[in-house]
Amino acid sequence: GFVTEKTNNDYVTVNSFVVPATTSASVQRGIDASASGWTVNVADGTYNGDIDINKPISVVGSSTAAIIRGLYAGSANTVFISSSNASIKKVTVTRDFGADLTAWYACTKNQGISLAQTTTGIVIENVLLTGNRNAIFVNNAQNVTITKCTIENNRTGIHFGNDFSGAEVHNNFIRNNYLCGTNGLYGVLPFDGDSVFQIIGFLMMETPNRFLRNIFLFQK
Image 1 (cartoon, rainbow, N blue to C red):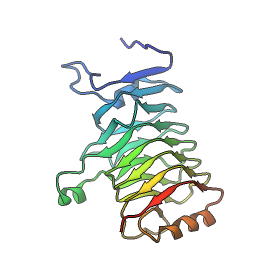
Image 2: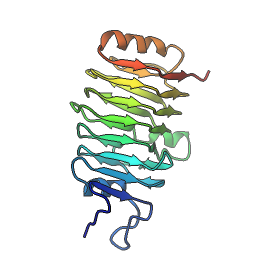
Image 3: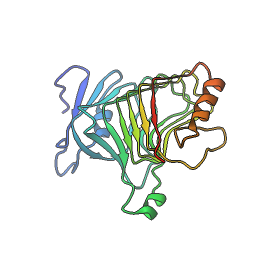
């Protein structure tokens, strides 16, 4: 049976599997075993597999050495947050993007972290996002907080679309992400030296969002 060591907590380590029933550790199994309001604690190590945070819980790593690595094929998202009032903290989110540029373009893993539409109150804190197409995708999700994250070496840093009212983005390092343009009504933070206009545009159009004390570094 399932035994908890600490009330409203469960724990995932790289050794959280029992052969032959399972052959590798899975953060998703920790999520599935949790209940509303719990914390899923993730030990340092690499966990290969996409996850769906489908209840109002916190997924918290021991440090950003707890790596959630999305599969090359399958879901478009390494981390899909489909529940309001959920959070992910202190992990690295990346993906298997293949061994060469052709494989990178062919990979169907589009988002590092994607929020389900109409969700609200989601927190992304102290997360390292690297090697993704879109590091974070927020479309028609409200009151999201993105704070203390390092978002680097992705194609796109943060991708906002439609109604993302109440968003707060503060105290992040957003650097060395690359994109050659924008897509329709979507805003991209950052893609090149001109991204300041995208930031200002959304500050004007989508109040009361707040973009505070972020550091944007661009590689020319």
